[in-house]
Image (tube, rainbow, N blue to C red; front, side):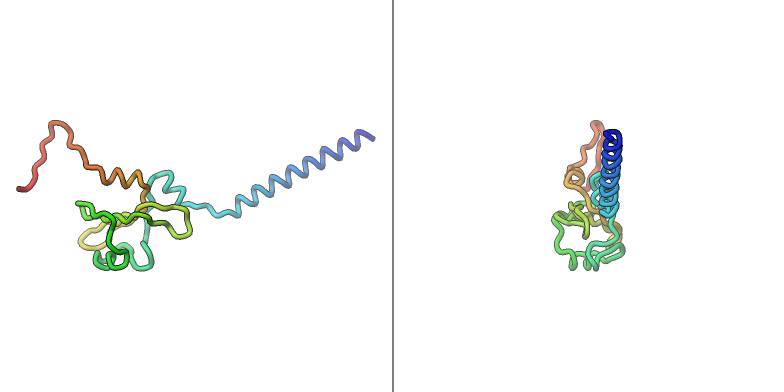
Length: 135
């Protein structure tokens, strides 16, 4: 009789373990992956197709400023940085980088604070290299 009770208890423990494991896997598969946050954490940048409903690749610079407002930083190469942006439906947040070519948006991305800092650091000229500039 003790053998039967031990067998029943073992089977009940196995069934309970499998039920618990199935519940965990099911809960994980129902949670949507935050791909944008994963990419931002892995690479420090996420490429964007649009910034809000009105600014996308090809948008005129003046329209981008009208819709996004004045940038936090205007870089010497014409790139604009907007701090404190996030991707809708994601926990990814950082600095919106808007690049221009011939007066139109040519690319956008969201970058981490570390990437922004690296973008803003003055580039060191290697020793012995001369650089010409306009008078």
